Picture (cartoon, rainbow, N blue to C red):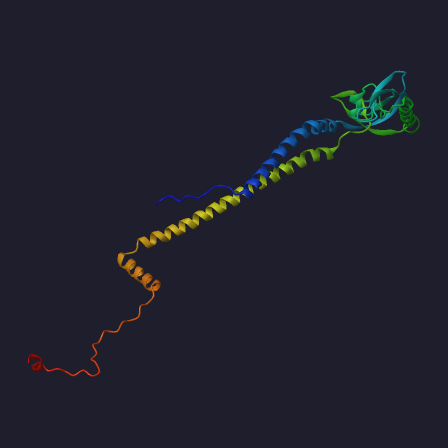
Length: 263
């Protein structure tokens, strides 16, 4: 028996579905790497800092000034100055004095100062922002303990006022790339499975047709002749039956005897 050949070519809609699924898979993998390097690593480092109880030891404002960069438009940039504020606290975890910082970003930006104000063009505005924080820690927080975050392994001499990243950032960094990856994989699998089922159905249909043809060929010749006669009888129109021709005599004919014919 000859092999049954079935077409495995995808239709235009199926091809678009597979392309969409592959695009979502690529986007999920790429976004996972990008978010992993940009957000996941800093978030994990931030979550490594442990909460501790801190009390203010001293608030200093040295005479040293630091520069910051401000923007005043698309092509407008400049530098201004701000005073340095240093807040030393006692850390309950290590029982030692450490320098307080607002968050990880300001710690990296200026490790010598506790607070970096939003950079303004006017130096006086920058100074006023620093003085507000100085008054807050001097008058309101000086005699109270507050929660700070301490990382013994990375920076034992520094503590943080708050974390820059929390668990929600970690959730978003993993959730959305995985959703895109799983959705693309699901689209590709469903399209391939649907095409496979269609191919199997087509193969079964062709196999059924070929089986009926082979069964007809295996019948005896008498059955085939009878079947062919039946087909011809059903397809051809019935011809009217012809009556046997009869010889009629003329109306005024006179029978001639044989003797008269001889004479």
